[in-house]
Length: 358
Image (cartoon, rainbow, N blue to C red; front, top):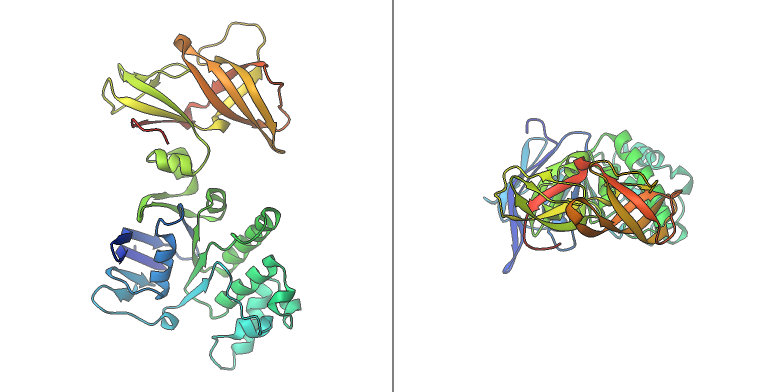
């Protein structure tokens, strides 16, 4: 990519017999936020360490602002010369240094050193805590100091490793929102590693999902959520109802009627994946059901605040039965045993050839 802030080309890395990263290529646009999302052990943090120069690159090359910083031929700039800022998962603040000195650590001496420290403090709204030590700060404040330290040298690329994992839920939401605002204000291309799909979709302009050392799909959060490439991506990005079916005359049977299955042969075993929020429920009114609507019975209902989680037994077209989960507004909380009409947003039905359940 021309003028990419960060570019990885066919990067691979082994730890002995373990192939931790396999042929990863990724580009970050200037001023964008990209998230690497995947389960623990999929290679996300290894990629971050390779970019930062904390691991020796074995295969491929990495460029920052179109300049090679490391390749497999032995060329390698030291970490401090790569123009990278990094926020570690545990923040790595020095307990014996106050906020100002933590941010100053690593900044070269010069006439603008104090200006860089002050600018970083203002960017994260910590200018009133310059004399405080890490143990005197909340988890969110510590995270902001770590972010300020990474921003102070004015890097080309910022790397964040699971930056919100150590925070409780309420604080995580608030700090996440603050961090995104800071990143957008800074204009620095940012790569965030996380295992949290909601966090990734909230933060990312560009999202790359990893599995077993490889990027299996990348694009905008909406592209991946509504057009997953396989069952792994579909299920990792959100809850899924997983129904077995079979292709017959170019379509598959579902409780909501047949769904076209282009590109799949008749007789192929498939999985029909439907997101819970794609199901729309209304109480039965005794009238005949329209096409594409099936009958359901509420087996269990749980109030979750903004939403309700409903467990349903549904009977649809051709007598096809299924047990499904639905997400509804928190104001809709029917009693267990309530009969309901169930329809579906067909744009959120995904069909994949696979004999194996998730």
